[in-house]
Length: 304
Image (cartoon, rainbow, N blue to C red; front, side, top):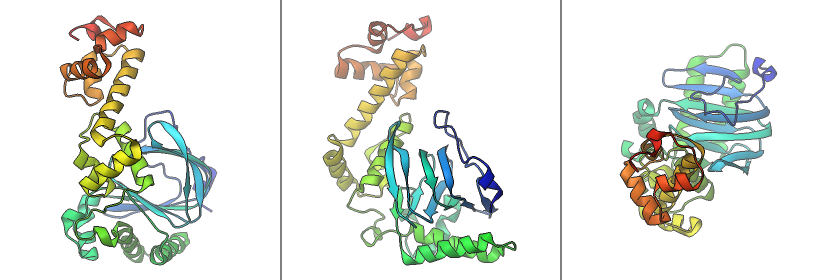
């Protein structure tokens, strides 16, 4: 039994996300990745890592996670299903009885050439994106072998590293329709929800259609069509609506300067936000702040 079994496997869901995973189980460090065997138990998680994260579960799981926005939604995960998420991706959720999980934190760029060679694909195809796969017999057997090896008292790090690298490679393996271009033609619902979550957590970043399509692993034109069909509006309209909603919330609930709010929610400037608000809402940010009874500082109220 791990010493971590005695530690509550929890991070605050309401605090800012942590930049590293709590050490819940037996963890082994290698040059370009870390592997951890996380014990079963009640778990909450709220992280946003600078590196690629890959996990594979040893049993079925259900709980709630922020797959779209701040609201927690129910999820179900099959035994030996694996998930890979790119750097800076928000992960937040909870489970009352989470199974054992094998977790990898990867320095993807440092491993990219070796992974591409093992998969016999071009390096440019291996871009950071959400991958959801399994269960598969080979990845299941690899995970079981790694678990057995990590539970022994004497760990052969060379052998463990080899097993882990092969499993990482298999989790990075793209389906047949993506192997020539790195992109598929179907937008999985779970991946879509993850993309929506990424949008909400990165409103100040470059959220171009190409960026979001690359994150999903779907060809750009197919991504746009599927997104509009599933969400009800094109990606660029959805992103702008989320930015407007976030800016309205900050205008109502904070005294931050309007220019600061503009940059924080992804507008290129205060004038860009003002023009967008006037076009979409019929009033400026300063007028909205005044009408909603906000108490802006004199600095916040100027120049809008």
